[in-house]
Image (tube, rainbow, N blue to C red; front, side):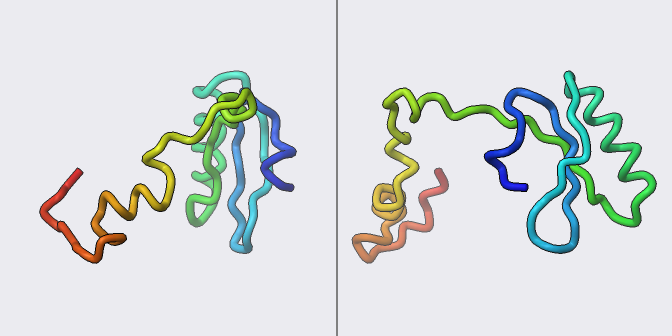
Length: 93
């Protein structure tokens, strides 16, 4: 299953198998329901294989918006001093 096939605005319990990818375990109306099921499934498993998530639609870019300037690789590299060849490790932002 790919992420584009998941339902939007619905709390999901996802299984993370040992291989790449994920398996949709269940859908829930509320976060509390999803977390309760996740906890129950993880209690039976040897390791934490299940997680919860909420898939939301990125409407801003679809409506003509643009990513925030700080998300671009060039700007991030410049602010960290990589592009200019300097490394300002004292900058902790």
